[in-house]
Structure formats: structure tokens, C-alpha cells
Amino acid sequence: MQLFHIIAILISLAAAFSWVNYRFLRMPTAIGLMTIALVMSLVLIGLAKFGYGTIGQEVERMLTSIDFNATLLHGMLSFLLFAGALHINLEDLAKQRLVIAILATASVIGATFLIGIGAWYISALLDLNIPMIYCLLFGSLISPTDPIAVLGILKTAGASKSLETKIAGESLFNDGIAVVVFLVIAAMATGTKPVTVETIFHIFATEVVGGVLYGLLLGGISFWMLKKVDNYSVEVLITLAITTGGYVLAESLHLSAPIAIVVAGLLIGNHGRKLAMSQSTREHLDTFWELIDEVLNAVLFVLIGLELVIITLDQKYLLAGLLAIPLVLSARMISVALPIGIMRRFRSFSPGVVSILTWGGLRGGISVALALSLPSGDIRNALVTITYMVVVFSVLVQGLTLAPLVRATASRAEAELGRTHLDT
Image (cartoon, rainbow, N blue to C red):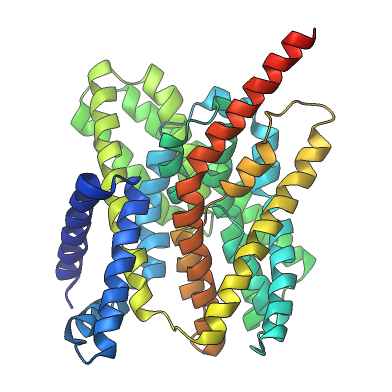
């Protein structure tokens, strides 16, 4: 199927599903689109069971022709990350830099090992025979919270500014860290390169530190260019160049392109917005990137929902997926609670921060994309199915209940504060 035809079908479905969601379901856009796409996928699977699988076969053919890993990680991700970073306040981020840095690194690595060990036991229990190294690989791809899923939900969650900054900041940075961890473990699993402490340190230094420095350089050059012109069409084009040319160059230099784009987006969204843009440019830039964000999010979550058609629905894989859901949540809670417990000694945190960070750690397209990048075979089929189930639960269940959890936590905190005032 031609690329234009695929894009036309996905955008048309996204538009139709958005209309249905807006008119009838009234869910957050990402959740509503994914729900409708999942229902459509289940209908197609059901029709195939009764011998009416022609449409389902066409959908399956279309989906198998899409390289989800390349489409997301080497295409859509740069636009979505830049759009998210553009509206993060750098001063708020700086205040939470220690917490975000720890959550985006130590918590991701800790969760990787906790999930990997737990997945190995689940594999043994169900006789799936997945080697430990591939269980750790699953841990690395499912540990990061997805900025695409998280940022969309946070818009309506009503979280405090500091908590929103922690969640959004972590989700923007930890996918870059997780991809590096994934690459290191994948190299060990496939034996493509010798893995030593020196090699691991070199990969981290090159990808992460190099990504930050490159992002600063990219943002700095773009800021200088923006300051020299006052034409919103030219300035929007410069931001498009950052997300396309800047991303491609980062990958060519073997730097963390996601981290680089986030850093550049933060610079443009803060210093660039204040010091290098007119009011007219700011309005046009915000409108343009909000539209890009909404359209690509819509297409992505429709695509995730439709992926069910090509997932291997083996009974053991489905059971493993169900067992993996509490495992991933438990690992997330432990990897968040431990560092926050240590940091409580020298800084304060809002009430319920661990429960909100745990439940608000949504998984999304990045995890699915990384799972689909694994070599073909039974292990890949198992891990893709398990990953898909965790992602679906995360977006639908956690996503729908995150806002009520935030509001309930805020209400309890206010009630406790009121009692404290009465006691004094």
C-alpha cells in the first residue's frame, strides 16, 4: 500500500473517531480515540472468526506495511517531544531538576531490573522460556513513562504545578534514557558488540551528555536566528527545521535525539519565546504546534488501537500480560518511593506524590515501538503482546482514573491542612 494511502486512511479514521468521541463519549482525546480503535479492531477480529475477514485482512495488510518503530521513534516522536517541551516552564523545571533527574535515570534503571526479574519468574511460571536477558530488555522498554500519553492527560488532570512539572519533566527526559538502556541490553542480548563497563559508560556519555550539549547548541543557534527576524512564517519554519533536520543529524551523530529535541524545545519555548519573538509570532507558533500535537496524537493513538489486529493473541501471552500489569505498577512504585523517601529528608513533597507518580506513569507508543523493533520470533511475539496489554491498561484505566486520583489527593491534603489549623 502506498504511503499516501496509509496516511489518508489513518487521518480519516482519526477525524471520524475524534468526531464520535467529541459528540458521544466525551473522553480525553487520546483515550477516546484508542478506545474506539480497539473496539474496531475487536469487531474486525470477530468478523474474521465468522468468515467475514476481507476488511480485516486489508487493515492487517496496511498495518504490517507500517514500520511502527520507524514511524514513531524516527518520525513522529521529534514533533511530539518538541511540542511538549515548548510549553514547559524552565524556571519550574529548574526547581524540580534533582527529582526529575533521579526519576528519569535511577528510577528507570531500577524499574528495568525489578520488572526484568519479575518477568523472568512469570515466564518460568507459564513455561514461556524467555531468557533473563530478554526479560531485562522488556523491563527497559516498559519502564519509561511516555511523554505523549502523559502530557495529553495532564492537561485535564488538575495537578499542582510542582507535581505536573515533575511528571511532565520526567516523561520528557526518561524516554531518551530508556532508549539508551534498551540499546545496551539489546547489544548484550544479540551479541552485536562486546559489552563492558567502559562500553556502557561510553554509550551513556555519548548519547545522553552528547544529546544535552547538542540540544543546547541547536537551541542556541535557533535562538540567534529567531532573534534576527520578525516574520512568523520564517520562525515557524526554523522550529520545523529543529524537529526534522536537528533530529536526523542527532541520530547520524549517534546522540540521543529525543533528549536533544527536548533541550532545544525548552530553550525556544522559554528564552526564545520571551526574547526573540513578537506577540504575533508567539500566537502563531503556539497555534501551529498545538495543532501538530493534536493531529499526531490522534493518529498515533488510532494506530496503537488498530495494532491489536496484528498482535499474537496466544492464551499464555495474554495471561503473562495480565500478570505483568501489577508487576510494572509495583516496580514503578518501588523505584519512585525509594528515591523520594531519601529526598524527603532535605526537601518537602506534596501529599500523595508517590501514588500519583506511580499511577500517572503511563506507558504508550514508545514501549510498543521498542517491542516491535525486536528480532522476529516467539520471544518477540510474546513480548509485543505483553507490552501491548500493559500499554492498553495504562492508557485506558490509569489515564481515565488519574484526574479523579489527583483531585481526591488534593481534597485530602486540604482537609488535613484544615484540621492542622483547627488543632493549632
